[in-house]
Image (cartoon, rainbow, N blue to C red; front, side, top):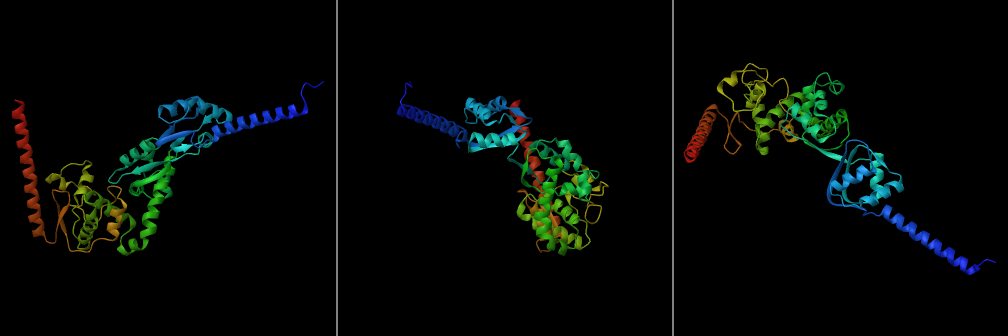
Length: 354
């Protein structure tokens, strides 16, 4: 005879069902708990190669992610996510095992914040991009040459392509190819400058390349951002009067080194030396930011033709050469006084050491 009555069997089945449901519910809760992986601050996880569960758990632990490593490995095995793709993944706030591990297993990355700085040269921009993305700097440097596929695709010289690396912070996938990263920045230049200021560019009477070249000089000359439209207006005034631009940054570019200029430097025979060659230089001397480009498109309307640096980094602007000569003399006297104070300070320090 059956040792259990019908009621006892039903009760046992109910108990087993309840236990199964509780176990399943607890299991699912652990797998889909939205707070299984936590971080109060964004933590970036860079996977340079495909890795497994054990390596991932160790890496997350070393980065300070708040997660139970053993439970993480259990969740990965249960969910079937055991291998994870190259990329950048950010732990920011709370995540469930299922959501986070599935993204990493399928390579659904977080974009990296990639910053391009103004006042750079091709080597420095390539280094900036290479340091912030997975590709090597040299891979980016090769793109800023006339023979690169992307330069030819856009019908630009390598120098012109570089000048369109608009300073800004971009969201770009860390594993993006150098070509796609540069294309992303170039497209942003077109959106922010060409599309937005197309009519203004046409009204200037200058080509886009000429505007960028002038803007690159403004970029290197202006230490105070508010002065950019005034400096642009000054250079345009000189061009309109068939005067030499006489822009110090172009001489520095011709010399190939940033330093205080000497009298003989202004005589260097180089196509970019605007003290001896008239008009706009053959190309840009750096990658100007949007404010410098806007300054050339919409310059300040004034009669200034000369400027000289001031101690605070700004400029004194003059309408006549006589005004400029006086301002320059005052600037030289200030410089000489700084040298005198420096020499006096060094002399006193030497005496104290003795």
